[in-house]
Length: 338
Ligand SMILES: [Zn+2]
Image (cartoon, rainbow, N blue to C red; front, side, top):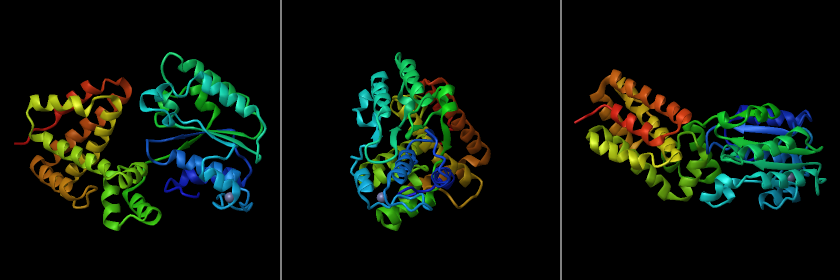
């Protein structure tokens, strides 16, 4: 599909729906942040709304009036209800019961310029708090009795926080992080990033093409991540007190802790690989050199032991929250190197 990188399986599920004329009224695209869930939802919507798509194709032409309106975000039959359009501190309440009632109202209107009325609601896991249940119930009602031609595309990075009754009403489209090769190739061909830079970004992206594109456009994000990697690599020689002090910043909230663990795991896999004598590592440059040095000194058993601890920490964070405590425990399990 136009503009979508990787996740062939997810793409073909949606392509087949178009080509066999069996479009469901609700889809739930799942997978980690930054892997292209909204991009795929938009490409699917564009394919449905495109006025010049041949019947044997599932790809929007990108040129007709409908496609141009979609590109400019002003197609009246494609409605984006994104919490990310709200300021960061308002995102958790951005999709509330009033917003869903408005979606329901808009869904009841006939399409303006096509046969469809398509709603994209990203990150429904952000629907939380005391009014979450009434919001979900309002959404469920729309999912239960969708007017003809209405397609609702939901995305979530945390499937376990979505109500089972809601999942059962949607067709699930599972998506995966991309490989570094897929990211590097897409950066070069679609975003005209130089090969060296594309490779560097792809190794830091941890499968999230959205991050790689953002880091290409905002180099300070790449620098932040390289700085975080340096901090993580330095922790093995830090004292107990120093480690506990780092826990404050590495896990200031759940999202920060999650990102820290993601990057740490990416790099520590390299430490473990290097400890086992592997020469093909994911990271490059200074991070790679550090991984090789620490892997050599630690040896396979200790490296593998902490890899398990990192995986367990991610699960604990997902299940119990408490980012600070999880980070402190992990930091105390980290082997000490002088
Ligand atoms: Zn078109």
